[in-house]
Amino acid sequence: MKVDPSLLWQNQNQTNAVATNKDSLGKDDFLKLLITQLQSQDPENPMDDTQFISQMANFTSLEQTNNMTDMLSKFVDSQSNNMLGQLSNVIGKTVSWELSTDNEDGTTDTQSYTDVVKAVTNKDGQIYYLTQSGQSVDPATVTKLADASLSDQPEKQSEASV
Image 1 (cartoon, rainbow, N blue to C red):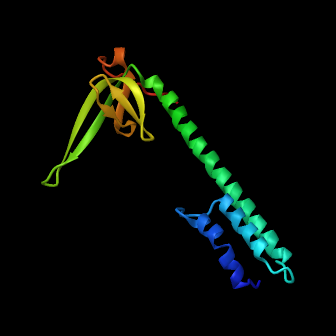
Image 2: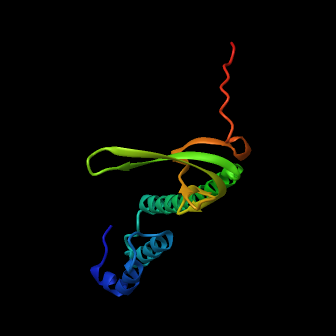
Image 3: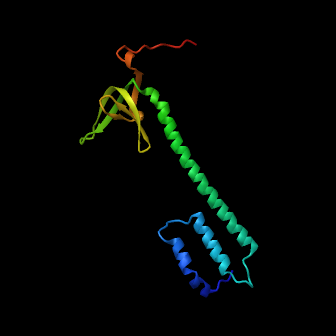
């Protein structure tokens, strides 16, 4: 498609306003560019229908992608809140966990801790158990979870018969 260069200078303010302070084009920017292109086309040699349909399909695809991104963000937020609710049944239970520390000499020290969970928190998208002593425990480090009233009793091991 031929474009008269003098028409580009006429619309320079519009296109510069579109590109200011943005890393990528959004659906509004895409529409503005399409409108500018339609206004600037040669009336004797208009845009090919195929090109126009292709650009509209791109616009539709962009809009659907943006909508899907928004929906996925909402889904992730709801899942995080869901997980927080599901893990709330840990409150009042005794939790045991291990923390490993690397020493300067290349060895690793592992310490075991036990405490009662008083809350479940979500800090920057990461779930933690907050213990009575005030420690935040990553659930991935938990080695044992028991009822607080049963934590002083020895574990019962049972064998399943087949």
